[in-house]
Structure formats: C-alpha cells, structure tokens
Image (cartoon, rainbow, N blue to C red; front, side, top):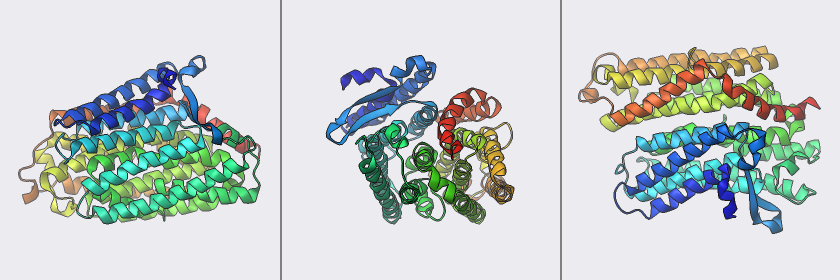
Length: 489
C-alpha cells in the first residue's frame, strides 16, 4: 500500500486527505488554514509535474492500484490520463485560490471548516481518477458529504432548507448510481468493479436503457440539467461562498465527467436511442435558465442560473457525439471553472462589504473600487465567450458539433449566447456603474491577496483563449476512446 506513494494519483489522494485530517486537530488560529494551503499547493505541484511525465513511457507514474476489497473484486485503482489530468489541474488550481481569499477567522471552528474543505478536494480527486466503480462511488460520496456539513453549519439564514433540498437530490441520485453499479457488477463475468471490464460487457438494449436512466439521473442532478436543477440556486445562495466556488467551479464537473467516462462508453445503444430527446430537454433548460437570469435581482442566483445555462451547453455538446464538440466540452470544463470562480469571488467581496446581494440596491462600485471592476468585467466577458478569452474557443467548438448534429437545435441553443450577454451586461451596469448608493458609499477596493488571485485567473483566461492548442492532443485521445464505441453502431 505504502509503495503507492511514488505515484502521482496516490499523492493527489493522500495529500488533501492528510491535510484535512491534520486541520481538524489544529486549535491555534490560522494553523488549520496554513495546513490546508500547504496540502492544496503541494497537490498543484504534483499535478503540474504529472504533465511533464505524461508520456506512455511514464505510465507507471500515472496509475496506481492496490487491494481494497479483494473478496468483491474491488481495488483502489486510479489513473491520470488526458481527461483526468485537466480536471485534477482545475481542482488543484481552484482550491488554493479559494483558500487565499477565505479569512482564517471568517468562520467559527475554522479548523473543522478547512478540514472539511480538504476532504472535499480529496473526494473530487478520487472521482476524477477512479477506474474502479466501487472506488468511484466511494469518492463520489466523499466529495458530497463534507459539502453538506459545510453548508448546513456555516451557510446563510435559510441554509437548513437549502441544504436539505441539496441532500435529498444528491442522495436520490447517489442511490440510483449505486444500484446501477451493483447491477453492472453482478452481470460482469469477471466478477470485478474494474471499468475496463465494464467497457467490454455485452448488454441488451433493454438493460442499457434501464442502466442509462440510473446513471443519467445521478449525473444530471450534479450538473444540474433541467428539470433536476432546482436545488442549485438556493444551495449556491445559502452555502458559504468558498463552498459555492467549489460547487460551481469544480463539483458540477463531476456530472459532465461521469457522462464522458461512464455513461457514453457503457450504454451506446441507449444513448443513440435517447440522444435527440435529451439534447432538446437540455436546450430548453438552457434557454429557461437564461431567461430566469435576466429577471434575477439576486447577484448570486444570477450567477447560479448562468452556470446552469453554460453547463447545459456542455452537456448538449457531449450528447451530440461529435468529436469537435466533445473536445470543446473538455476544454470548456476547465475554462468555466476559472471564469465562474472569478465571478463568485467578486460577488463575495461585494456581499462582505455591503451585506447586500440585491442588484437593485447596489451601484457605482467602479468609482470606489476600480481594480475590482476591471477584473470583474474581464471575468464577465470571458463568461459570455468574448473572442480572445478562454470560453470562446470551447463554445465555438461545441456549437460546431451541435450544428453538425442538428442546425435547428443549434439555432435555439444559440439564443443562450444572446441572453447571456443581456443579463451579464445588465449586471455589470447596475453593480459597477451609475450613481453611488448608500450601500456602496464606503466601499473599498480589493486587497493584495485578492489582486494576486484575480491576476492568476485573468492570466489563465487570456492564455487559454489565445493559445489553447497544447491541450488538444490529450483531449483528442480521451474523446477518441469514447467515440470508438459509436463508430461500430
């Protein structure tokens, strides 16, 4: 077991796990945050090094498997490949940035707060790297349970209602997922939970339809997809903002990842049969979420509905089964995480100084905080896919694939671009421009720590927007494995 520590995947599990456990025992003020920062930064270093050793000759450094439940044919098996590496990189970037902008004494019992945050990172890393179905489910739950406690203990005034709704949705989705995994295990002639063995199984079209439903519900709730989205705006609004950043920037990618790694390769017959209906449902949800965002007066809920629309576009791109769209989705998962976290940091700063989240009660912030205003506008323009920003390339590729699938569906989905520009520009106008109001009279510009975080995010926005080509080779290898299943149908 301990020989696994010389592998990148094992380090990405153990570092945040150890950081989380140590944080719980840190009683001195600031010590828990320091431990969490060290473990999250070390995780970022490990992921970055893994890109240097990503070639096939270093495969032993990028995969690990050791016995867990041998009687059941299950092992702790993890791998870093093209898809996993980028999602682990996104996770490893966002966590230290979120920790930097979180004050060490911002929440009571801060040692428990930072400990739970690190356990969440551990769970997310495990979900993205697991190649054993039972291990995948274990880490799926490990990522969700700390978020439940973080939200219910340190959330807003209506946190209990919002958290309970979040729990019910995710619990039902997790139950469906577990049933589907157990059925696959019982039908697997090798008697293991190994993903590669699942890929080689032969299932009837009827079995695939049932299993598709079980897996799809779990993943659709996490993204979330209309009409399974109703938990999200309340949860984002009531959760502590650092937790909301993780939910919106990383955790929703669990659903998209599940579709790519599990749903599409395992149930190709069901996907082909339900493909058009699912894309139509997703597109309807995109337009609906965009319209709700236009009339939303709560800045946090506006960002939440914006996220629903953007994630919906990615989900539609996946189900188009076009290579260009799937490559765009993988790229866009990373880009969306960067952009949405920048927006959440700005929203948290505004709420922290004014105590207000209603857009109609704010204004003139640009006169008081010009630096924050510049960074917010850049992140907002990236969020609506302005050319030269990171989201432009990904969304262009997704729409390209959707157009190849069906031009009429693409035209309707394209409405979300127009609508996103409407609500984003309207938000910028009301928050940052116009007359200074009483709530913003004493507004102060951002600290050096926030400037550093925004600079990192802004650099990523422009680098990924201007020169995204280095990532496409790894992405193509990942999507090619998925689409090979469909070339034979």
